Length: 129
Image (cartoon, rainbow, N blue to C red):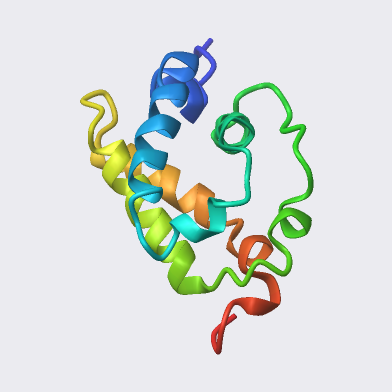
């Protein structure tokens, strides 16, 4: 009998990594002049909490994301595909700061988050959106 395969969440270190990842990610995002304006009117502690929960759920943590629907949260904010690309680049950079997260895991994580792109950019995605 084979052992059950660990989720991506567990393979990267689970609850010991996700909070640090979100902190490192938002240190970059909030220093990005094109992304920081999206967070000026937001409660940063709430954003970080929801982002920790969302990323964990996207990586198969066995707890469901309890935040609002992504399309609803991002609707009307003017987020375009280039903004999402910048966010994903910052996510990639943040992931590279963890020695336990190799390039294969980084690509898988970024790919999973990118699957939500249509919900995030909605109608404001631009010509390709």
